[in-house]
Amino acid sequence: MGIRTGAQYLEGLKDGREVWMHGERIGDVTTEPGLCRGARTLAAFLDRVHEPAHRDALSYAEEGSDERFSMSFLKPRSKEDVERRGAAFYEWAKWSGGMFGRTPDYKNASVMAFAAAAEFLAGEGGRPEFADNMRRYYEKARAEDLVLTHTLVNPQFNAALAAAGRSSPEVALQIVGETDAGVVVNGARLLATLGPHADEIEVFPSTLLKASPENVPFAIAFTIPIDTKGLKLICRDSYDAGKSHFDAPLASRFEEMDAVVIFDNVVVPWERVFMYEAPLLCNRAFAETNAVVHMMHQVACGKLAKAEFVVGLLCAMAKASGKDKDANVKGQIAEAMWIAETVRAFLFSAEQQAEPDRWGLWIPKRLPLDTSRNLFPRLYPKLVETVHMLGSSSLMATPCEADFENGIAEDVERYFQLTNLESRDRVALFRLAHDLAVSGFGNRQVLYERFFFGPQPIMASIYYDLYDKDAVMDRVTDMLERA
Ligand SMILES: Cc1cc2nc3c(=O)[nH]c(=O)nc-3n(C[C@H](O)[C@H](O)[C@H](O)COP(=O)(O)OP(=O)(O)OC[C@H]3O[C@@H](n4cnc5c(N)ncnc54)[C@H](O)[C@@H]3O)c2cc1C
Image (cartoon, rainbow, N blue to C red):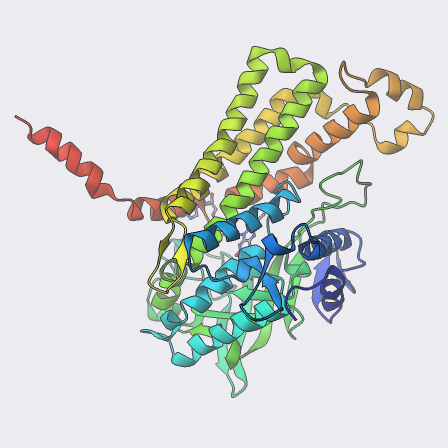
């Protein structure tokens, strides 16, 4: 089939999936208030891939075939391929100003990398059939243009146990049995962003399992359709409260939903298992297959689009009030511009230094991307703070769309204008700023940036371990040894 249309995607979501939200089981996520508009946004994005203006940049065909696949499934065989992938990631992210973080290209990048490095799954602790499973799964995901989410983290029950690198058997997802048909798993996982809107879920291990016998039941990797019997998604409150696009320009479009995933004696068919009872293999998987680098690539492209969007918003806010002539205001916005340009520089550096890996793929250079993934969780809150500082009470002076039609319409038209913007446009602009920086939707974006790629101290610690410290320490030694 290859790239899907939005209608095909929405049709696929109408299955027996068990999704709970606002105290009820949801019948159909494509019509349910609070969920349906996020699904429609994603459907519209999939349709855009078919448009002549985007088709060649966002999809590719194998030589001699007309079947087109999403660019995020392309196995990069050259630096140009890495750049093509980056350009596609960036384009997808621009459509939401980076606010729909979990577009399918994120997980496609990981499935592509695991398939290319499938031999890793047959190595020590693995099995040859698991490597074949992964290769087949890539072909399936690519051909069916599946929308995937993932869940990596076990819920914590006992902090001391977690600190010792172990999972809590009371709550964590674990293997509880085997049948000829597959593995039986039970327990919970945090967190599946896009869960209710995904076709399938990739359940991979967090990379913090110590290789102790107690951890063996928790060490498993598989994928499974969301409508699998026994799988439940428990959603947080929706931030799409049904407001108009004018009133909630972001939340009304880009609600990607986060859900805790419960596995109630779920049977995972053997052909969908990629790692099994192998904590050490699980720990090494994302790094050694380079899946994490390809995911970081998608993420950096998205963060560039997101930072640019905030810069655009700040410039529009300053221009509207005439504050764009003020040196202090310009300085604040310049700091936001530096953040965007820093991410762009990391991305450029990573793509330009792309190199072949041992799996026969070209990968962008890890170090700049890793720097970006460690910095952005700290920089995005700073961008939001600048929206607060520049917006101030204007973020609260936000009558709703209906107020332009009702008994206070004249007041609203008169008292909400700005020197460079008539009232309706000013309110629209600051409602956008409010949605980005003040609303529940906006605050969730900050939380997402802080955590979605993992705990900051762990990511920083991995970065430290990988950094070429000897090269810089040698210079210190050299200085100390000078007579
Ligand atoms: C909006 C959102 C969306 C998410 N989407 C997904 C998703 O789609 N898939 C997925 O798998 N996960 C997702 N996550 C979960 C994310 O991976 C975790 O939040 C993250 O790994 C932190 O784990 P935790 O939430 O259990 O926090 P904890 O591990 O309990 O951490 C709590 C605090 O302790 C700190 N901490 C943790 N460990 C250490 C340590 N060893 N040393 C020092 N400090 C430490 C953390 O930095 C954090 O500040 C999402 C999270 C959020 C907030």
